[in-house]
Length: 219
Length: 228
Image 1 (cartoon, rainbow over the protein chains, first blue to last red):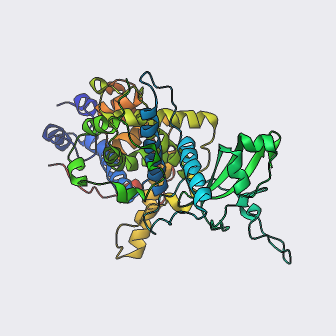
Image 2: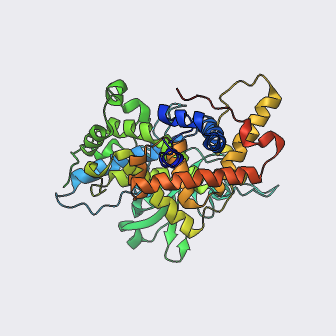
Image 3: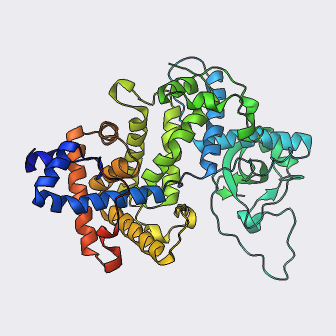
């Protein structure tokens, strides 16, 4: 093996050199000198790889994807056969989940049992800075505006969302009657149809609060 | 073609995800990526979970190395698997492995992100989430510090590489893809991967020697394995 052949068969990693290449290094001081830093670099890259071995996506990514997978499986089953036009988005899955649970909460009057600690599916949350309630100001226990923003009303019997809690807000269409059950006033014609609403989901995926979305923005 | 079989939609949101997955995970872990893909397209949730568990970490790290942002890496990991759920995802095993295909999607998403200029945040200023876990017990704190600094200097040097060289180093050296899979991911011939790798290492050495300090010199690294 000559020098050109040695470098032409550049080893994938510093310690992956063949016997033939090793023999060339033994007889060619120039190549050996040039190869030494490459070998050290390969060792450094090995160390970097080992250092990052435990780095992985946060659990909420898997939870959201599994929710999307389930939603898509159900949605595909309800579609007539044909080419799929559905774009599976996590927000869609979350919205579907929230719609169902939202309805269940309002029908039953109490939220479903919370998931067991340590195994909860934590959805990706939208970070919004917490807003401090001014000192001396009486806070409405059902008003979630302090944490979530203007207009949010806590759902009946749902636990509130604290400033340090993870949450996710999804926008969806809901029956007007559901909004009335949640304590939001609607005109008769809107109550009979569907309205656009923002639903705040807790870290367990359960709806906690809702606000009406009007044409000009939020309620 | 619609490959999904009916499943009750009202499974959402259901009990915690981990608890409803039944059956032997060991059974799934012995299956190839292509077998898991076929199963998940038939609505097998455990196959999807298994494939995700098998591939997510390396995809996430690739996106993190390339973008420098944990939140971007998280979004990209999510998007890669959502793309896989689409019936028209475009994977063809005749053209390469599923792993290479997934890295290819991740790479396109990274490029899109870089073009939008959202990934200009240096790693240091991001959250602690990206900090790798300490895996080793360090007997000599100074030696450990020197080693840590040397690795950090190398990480910064990788981060500073031009994109086309950075991606090949991350794929082949850090995520251990073979050149064939890397070629699929990068959409180029294997020879190009090889030449970019050669150039990337030369640039890394150049960069490290520019930043050279007594304790951070590249030759402080000792090869962990020697050629036989």
